[in-house]
Structures are given as structure tokens and as C-alpha cells.
Image (cartoon, rainbow, N blue to C red; front, side):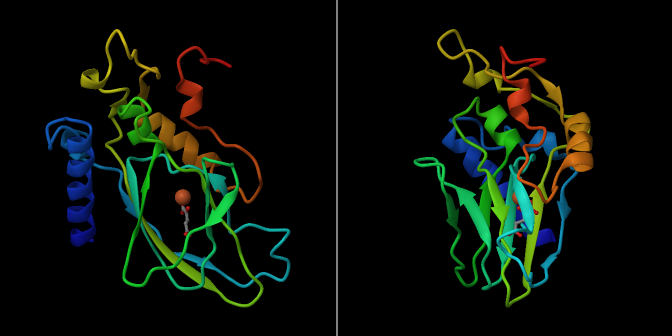
Length: 192
Ligand SMILES: O=C(O)CCC(=O)C(=O)O
Ligand SMILES: [Fe+2]
């Protein structure tokens, strides 16, 4: 767990640098993080066309470090054509997923990737996501350094704690439905 945390902070630093921010600019949001680790087991399914392991969603936090086994089933929505693309298994590697919080901090320079998990008839699948999430009292909004007259903030500030609680109660429905996501905080769409 310590190694995952170190990797998460390293990635956070690289993301900050890529946005021309101080390397430790985002660290303060993670002093009492709501980070958690989950072990997922997807048993074989007799009707894989009729079911999903996890319905379509975006991870709400800052970033996700995911280990998946060689069975496969993680699909990511391709931006170019909106089709679901299977994420290939690469031995000894992690999949890094940018979450909603990073999208808002970066004022849309980074985009949270929509994904889902398909199931199959033959093999059970295991995966292990580590969700690197800010503190409950963190207020999430586009970072001051990344907005200006030319590029006004695209989201209203919201409480990570409230957002996360709502997410946890409604997310991971095994249905092709949209859940609460940051688009609800996009400016001009409040209350829509
Ligand atoms: O099992 C996977 O590969 C991903 C699971 C997932 O997207 C999630 O738990 O948020
Ligand atoms: Fe996910």
C-alpha cells in the first residue's frame, strides 16, 4: 500500500509539472485522503451480452492505479468515434486512469476517461483498483493558475466529500445509465 501511495504522489507531481505548476501544488489536497483500494471479482457469466461487470462510469477521484489480470474486460470509450475499446492486458503493468477531480482542477486540459467492465462466459476475472482521492473537506474547482480572462473556470466549486458520498450511493449500477458526474457542475449547466 505504501508503494502505491508513493507511486500516486509521483504521478500527481508529474501531472502538476505537465500543467506548469509547482510539483507539490496538489499535495495539500491529500493530507487526509479518502483513498481506497478495492479487490474486484467478476465470476463467469452465462449471458455476457446481457450483463456488465461494472456499468459505464468515470472514476470521481484524482487518479486510479489499476491492476488487471490477463482475462480482460475493461473497455474505455474512445474519444474519436465513441466506441468501446478493450484495454489490452500488459504483464507487470498498471493502468493509470485520470479521474473527474483532475479534469476539474485542470479546467478540461485532462479528461476523465469513461469506462466499463464486460464479462465473459468462461473465465473469472480479478482486478485491483487503487483510487487516489482527496480529503473529505477538499473544495474542488479549476486551479487559479490555470484560469484567466482567456480561459475562464469551466466548473463551479464543489465539495469532494459531498460529491463522493452521492457517488458511492448511486454508482456502479450494472445498467447502461449515467450517474452523477462533474458535468453537473459545468458552468452554465447548474441545476440542469
Ligand atoms: O475491473 C476493472 O478493470 C475496473 C473497475 C472499475 O472501473 C472501478 O472499480 O472503478
Ligand atoms: Fe472505474
